[in-house]
Length: 193
Image (cartoon, rainbow, N blue to C red; front, side, top):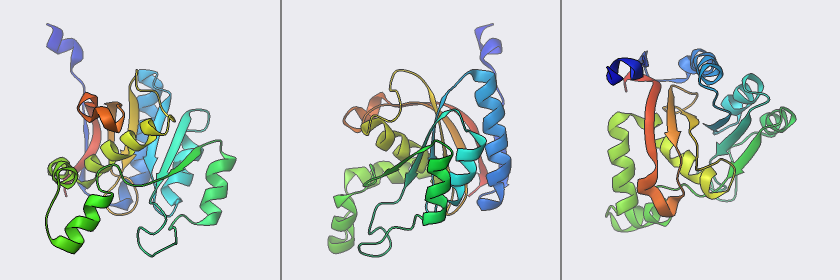
């Protein structure tokens, strides 16, 4: 009986990729309105997806999480100024910081060819797709920055490469309490990735 009341549908995109972004954002908007969730974390590299999300979710607590300075090229950030201005004008926040599931461990792997626990966790999450790993990671980052609550569910949106193709309902936790984080529901993700 209880199972019947808890049954929900997840959406699956045939393939991963940025072409799913607009459909995913609309789906999440409907979901958030229905579920009464007010906090959303969105991964965005150049800011294009962040700008779209900040417009669609205007009035919500929207946190756009970017790559850190030097991710692709030393001392540079991929976030484009035009998108940054649009995101902020729509009332969203931008968080730029080291990735919760890599950091110094990425340097150890690159220089010494050995994997460390954080990258092992990241690769395990990738079993559900790149977007799943990124959703968990940006949730940890936003929680550590105090930009989202850790005592109620939020929505995390990420993608495979560019754009957005994955949305999860998550009960956040701080990085130091990683195993308290709970993926409550898969709202949508790619079927093939």
